Length: 267
Figure 1 (cartoon, rainbow, N blue to C red):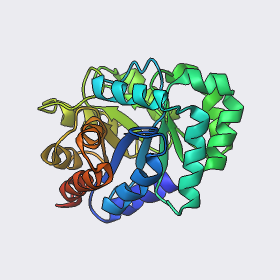
Figure 2 (tube, helix red, strand yellow):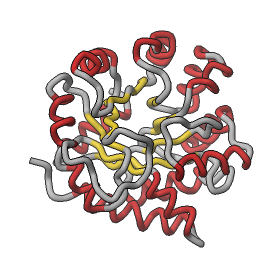
Figure 3 (cartoon, one colour):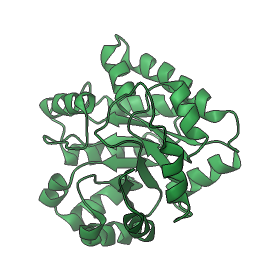
């Protein structure tokens, strides 16, 4: 059983949803992830999504775009991201680490080589927002051969045929985009989010994690009542960027989220 499956099984037994913070690797400093990831795990993160910075992050809103640009200016690359994943494993980080990045850098590295390097570093899953499932066979096969999951996204606009297609090909979990638009904190979650989650759940037994637009503990608590995982990115990065002590601020924010998704048990 891989780390992703084991983690979702564990949190399900605990009667709660998994918390998955997102950080941009290389932000605010080139090697910040080496300190941030262990700190977030200590604060209660169950899985960590590691953003690989890219110059044209089409799925991301202003906050993650800005952090990606800073990370690129700091010298972050896909190869350095993988080196830091390996370093995190060497330092004893055991939670699932999920790389989120765009397809162009993977193509530049080479699909087979990327899959091998990701597995060797200790990554458990890969999310590629600009790679539709119909065009993902090569990467999916290469990652599957290395025991790394390729995680697909679904949006509220995904019709039933696409939901079934992704359910057939998904590994690890399915990432549900809560809204139509890019990443970024929102004041309110979409009113039809529960219906969207229920529609996908009818098509798969895989865990469903919801991201995009979740910024406050009460929003995380609401999503935890209907989904298996809660993903928070932009609000965490904004907290990190505004703090004098990024580690302490990130930990305090994630502890609030962890408390919100940890209780009460989901019905």
